[in-house]
Length: 543
Ligand SMILES: [Zn+2]
Image (tube, rainbow, N blue to C red):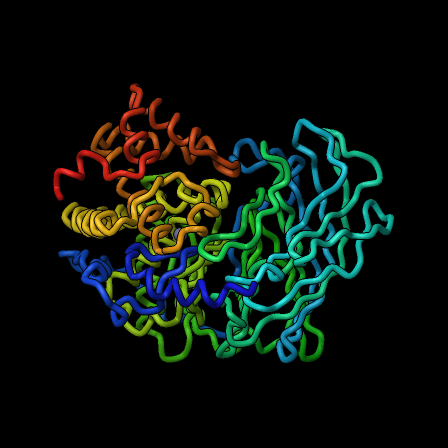
C-alpha cells in the first residue's frame, strides 16, 4: 500500500499518546526515548510497590531441537465435546495444510484442504478467502498467491481482487445451510526481508522468520455478509471464525519451530524435517522459525509456558516468562480457564508494534528486551496474554468493533497489576490512563470508543485510535466496575467469557451480560463512556 510509509511515520509522532502496549496496535518502538510530551511519562508511571512474584524458570531445559508443542486439548477422536466445552468438530471449519519452507529463498509452497460448513441461515454461492500478505501495511511487501483451486475435487478458477487480498472460490451449486464442501488450494508465498515496510509479523530479520497470515484464510460471513475489509494500517486485520488445524510443515532441521498447535508427528528426511501439528479450536495458525532461539519454560495451572528469546536477551526471556505465568494464573482465576495446554512467548524483531497476539503464541518486540524491568515490558506482555481470552477464545469483528477486544485487553493489564502486586498498583495504572486520556481530550483527541477501525484510520491524527480505544476504553471498564461493584463486575466478565467462548461477540452482547450481572440498566454509563466524544462527567470533575 502506497500510503503505508507515510502513515507509519505519522504514527511514530502521534502514538506517544498511548500507554498500554499493543499488539495489534502500533506503538512507537521505545517510549522511553522518544518523548516529546510529558504524557509519555505514563509509560513508566505504574510502579508496583511489591517485588514481582518470582516464578522459577527452568533454566535446565535445553533450548534446542524440539519444536514447541503449543495448544490444545485436541479433539482428535471426534468425540462429543460438550463436556470439555470445546466446539463440536462437526460444526467447525477444518484446515488441513501441507507446506514446505525455503528458509534461504524466503519462500514457501503449500496445499490446503478446507472443509467448510455453512452454519449461516442462507445459501452461499462462493467462498471468500483473504490473502493477508497482499494487503501491505503491517504485513509488509511480501505476497501470497493461489496457484490452483478445486471444489469437491473439481478444478475451479479463482477470482482474485485487483489488490490480491481477496480470492473468491465459486461453488458449482449454492451451499445450503447445514451443508459442507471441500475446497483445495495450492498456494505460494514470499516473505519480506527486513520488514518490507511492515511490523515484522510476516517477515525475515535477524535469523527469525515470522509467518502471520501465510495461508489463504476464510473470510467471515456474518450479519453484514462476507467481511472483506482491507488490511488495516493501525489495527488488527484477522477477523476469523474458530477452526481446527492440522498442519504439516517441512523445514531445514537446524531450525526451531514455534507455532500454534501440538506436534503429533516428526519425520526426518536428510537435512529437512517435517512436523505435523494439530490445534484445538483457534482463530488462526501462526508460525515462527529460527536457528538461534533460546528457551526458558515453566508451568502454571497445568499449562506449559515457553519463553523463546534471542541470544543475549536471557534477562528479558526470564521476565517475559514470569509475567506470562503470573498473567495466566490471574486471568484463569478472574476470567475462566485458558483452554490450551501451552502458551509460547517469542521475542521477535518488530517495528511500530510492541507485541502481537496469535492463538496460543504471542510476539513481543525485541527492542523491549533491552530493558525488561520497565513497566512497559510487563504491560505489553500481560496485554498480549490477555488477548488469548479477548480476541482468540472470545472473538469479535476487529474492523467494526475494535474496542471490544482492545479495551478489555488493555484493562486486563491493570488486573495483572492488581492481583500480582496490590490495589495501589492497579490504581496507579488507572491514574496514569486518566491523565493520558484527559490530556489527549484537552488537545482535541477525544472520540467515540465504539467507532470502527475505518473511522479511526480516516482521522488526520492516528494517535486518536490508541488513546480512545485502548485508554478511554480501559477506563470504561474501571468506571463500570466502580458503578456495579466487584462481585457483579467479575461475574459479568466470567459470564461473557463462558457464554461467548469460541464464538463471536458484539458490543450489545457484552453490555447485556453486564446489565444482567448488575441486575440494572446501565444506559447512562454506556452512553457517556462508549457513545460520546466528550469526557465523562465523573472524570471531567478532575480537570
Ligand atoms: Zn491488543
